[in-house]
Image 1 (cartoon, rainbow, N blue to C red):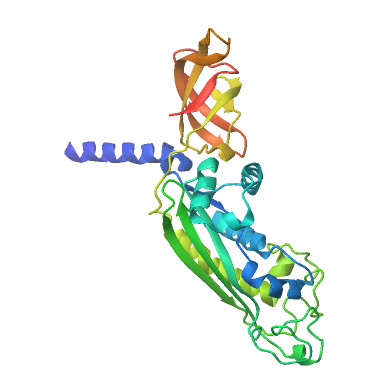
Image 2 (image 1 turned 45 degrees about the vertical axis):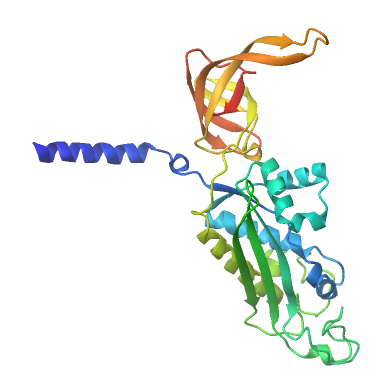
Length: 328
């Protein structure tokens, strides 16, 4: 009898665990990755590409791509970050400051912000001078003076910090270094010149760039850094996102809200569904100073995209388009 009861309870537990959607089992920590500072390597990067290229943005894009693939964090989309930076008018120099990064993160509704700097970007002999018109071992065309025909490896160094958006505390400091396994006279393509970066433009996430010896070093450094950040995911404190939006569509018990990932909404979040019942106005100005609402039920978020979310609703009365949806 006891064996039968134990077996029944075990099966019930297994079925219950299978019934829980994977996204509801555990909330991923939300992080935002800011563009990396590349002032230290700007001159060498310009010499490589033949023009000033924002390699800090390229490194950031690659790191986001890697972290999304690793699936340890929930990454906020770049357009949401750019919008906040433009609206708040944060200067590039401010974005490497921990306190400023924390402010940006609070506005974005994320648990942490990742920011960093590129410390090395170029040839392994870039600090040596061989003459022939070379500047720091680099020229815009590697063939000038004959010296740049010497084959060299590509080397890349990156540092990054993960900053708690609530306290401004640095939660992790990581580094990534990369060195190409191949040598060549050109870091970014067959002719050794700047310009189109081996036909791949300046998209550092492209396969064309990844196939170059510089791309090989960059990917190696970013992968190292992402691995270290992944190891910190479990220890990262969770910041409870606060959000408010409206019910945009109702189909039975399924609701679509006009807020999504960019507002801090995650799968598994509980949302209070309320309806305005009256407004209170300032008797002197006639301005609405408070809206009284009546909560009719709650909804659990089941799907999220950038600007909308789907939720399963239960309540004492049916939900309607225009009802308020607020985080609990």
